[in-house]
Image 1 (cartoon, one colour):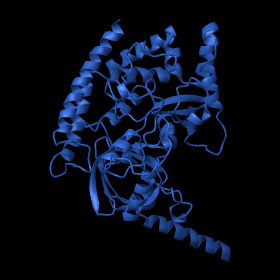
Image 2 (tube, rainbow, N blue to C red):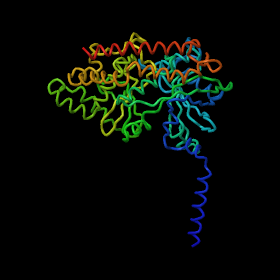
Image 3 (tube, one colour):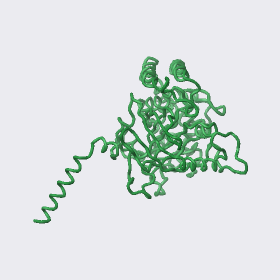
Image 4 (cartoon, rainbow, N blue to C red):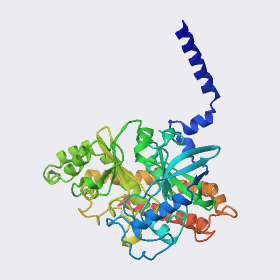
Length: 449
């Protein structure tokens, strides 16, 4: 009887404790992903990060060892040899994590992992001394050292990526294109705009509007398909040959299981592509979501994007869903452009210029049925999602939402911004509207050929 009485008392205490917890706090620190809150469609949230002098100095020393440049300097540090990098890496490896404090509204997350991220955007910002740096937050990065933050989450999310809208003065391209991909049946990250304040040790500084992007390996697949995700890779491969070092795992890292990507590369490059195309296509479709990739090409080629597969071997993920790999586009701030850095150009509609260096495109488009599906997907896209009236409505709506952040006294300014002047935002939105109309016309001509 005594034991039963004690159990009853304990249950009453637990119940009363649960009732006393603010539901908003439970929501903020809970494990259930709150997509509408973290990625609002029509709101710009605000977040503050305290790094501090010591951690900012650690970040600087780490970056100096990687690129041999002090913050704000284009000149190499005498006697310092930068880390070895691949042809794609302007900043070798992953910068270090430091422990920070994050505040949003009335809530504070302690011991949050903060690290710089990015490639050209990070290198350029660093050398120019612009504090609006691309970074990532990992809310349980330091859980091994600090048990109190074990499984710490931000409205259900473990990791968030912060992009400074480098090269995009509309502050819309990443969010707009990911939305267009999803509407067209292509998996793509959710994106939202946040105003970011950072204390580097000299007090909180306004670093302007960022695009906050979800992590592919966390909730994306389940949220968009209702299915559990398997292996997730962030490749730097053209798929010409199998080199597992070019397929960086984002999850399941303890498991030496790369059979899915091994099979994809093997099947894609199998000689029966020419001798037995029916079997080749059957084998390929068993391991790779071909239709979803062709829909990706339809959207990507219509809007124009010189910074993706077909021009460069990164800026995409592969996710295993029910035994098949799906292609997920990523890092889209330089989209809606036909020409870009290093003389790269966006793919043409017919993709005749694409060589066998890019087999995932060349081999699929060489098949008449796949090409016909791709072309019909372009037509569907420009009718249903990319028509000028819908796009103009989207641009006007989001311009209204963002505009207050680009007017005095809220305007972000150097050295905490990439904006050259207060008019850059408005002018860039007008230019994007004109560009969209031009691409719609070009796509309309293509589908009629």
